[in-house]
Amino acid sequence: MCYLDPSKAGEEDDFVVGFWNPSEENCGAELGKQSISYDLHTEQCIADKSIADCVEALLGCYLTSCGERAAQMFLCSLGLKVLPMDKGALTGPVVLSGQTNTLDLNYGWLKIPPRSVLDHHPDPEGTLTHLISGFENFERKINYTFQNKTYLLQAFTHASYHYNTITDCYQRLEFLGDAILDYLITKHLYEDPRQHSPGVLTDLRSALVNNTIFASLAVKYDYHKYFKAISPELFHVIDDFVQFQLEKNEMQGMDSELRRSEEDEEKEEDIEVPKAMGDIFESLAGAIYMDSRMSLETVWQVYYPMMRPLIEKFSANVPRSPVRELLEMEPETAKFSPAERTYDGKVRVTVEVVGKGKFKGVGRSYRIAKSAAARRALRSLKANQPQVQKN
Image (cartoon, rainbow, N blue to C red; front, top):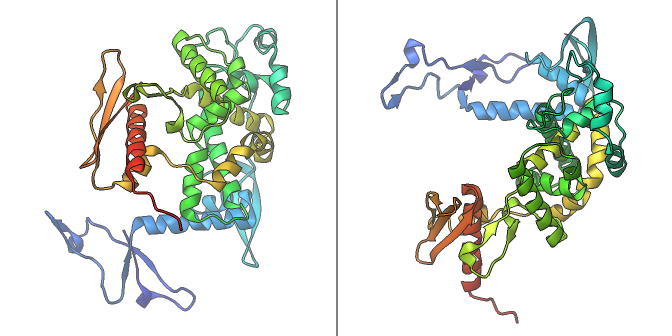
């Protein structure tokens, strides 16, 4: 917890920041009761989150006004070593609000990563050529040609695929690509001329940055045809998801909308979205970033054409999950039950809307079953709402 003391401010500063130390004798806390360690007349207590929000806002200010390099140097000035040490120190000019400030930081530019081939392989080039045979068709589809094909191979390699002995699996690239796509999509939404409100920005990002959207796009652009894994169960889930996408013949919204309708609504079940498909969509973004000498612009040039239709569709009509919509409609009366196991190993969840009925959903996981139950409840509630007659 921090406090601001205007009585101790100098001529140039409006406030002096102090810190409350709960270990001090004069600000100890009794059981169930906490004493206040600052003067209410001259000092103002500020929550930690408010301070954190201000730091994030300053970072955003540097990012939008001065660029990514300036934002990195700002983080370094706070003591966060986000840039590697370099003997050839750079003195970075940072321009903000018409003034130029120099941050003399001993940090150099990010180094280009080493080649991703595993050590001590007898014939890496021959193995690589064999494993990526046919990938040139995929490169043409995404309109990007890899300089270092090992990144391409790594991006599509599942941990179960033991035939790839020259690179690691996609997990590290997926970790990187996840952060990259989150940032690039956030940046695009923030710069939208429509100037979305903070709440809409949050909803849009949640609708666009999730495993279902990424998995759906991966299927649309044939990622699944190049996926390297040895797991019959995983391929069964992928095949089911691909078939569903082909039947719908359109991009879906939130993951809770991925469902097949059956005659018996209690058996209605959401389609399981294969996490591996969303993962390789992210890992390829990480691979392109590494292969393009860490160029975010290059990644966005590849991924924006894929995502543009969904960005425009969701910007016009922001989707919400059924669970959230139900809880907003019935915040006090909607109660979800714990998961129940069915005879065939699936999960059943019941949501009770007090005074309006109980609704069941079935799925392979609690999340899937919960969204199915919420969807059935919403259909019933909306059907029973009185219709407003138009004059």
